Image 1 (spheres, one colour):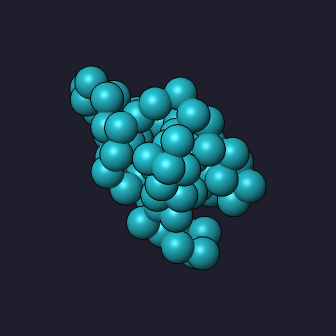
Image 2: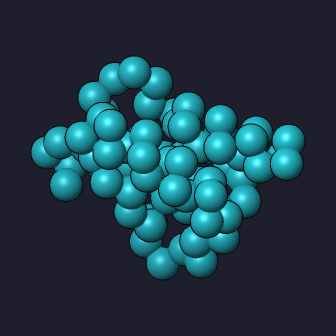
Length: 71
């Protein structure tokens, strides 16, 4: 349970901090709950989560929060 909470916190933090720029998610297991938390945080900044390139999507760092003009 603690591991899941830590993954959620990592997903919420992202690399972008409080800026309005798109950012890659921090590394960690891309579980349903972790992706849901990252999606909620990204939507709060006006963005959407997208998988990067042809990655497998098993790690959170394979996803990015795309905000603003980068959409």
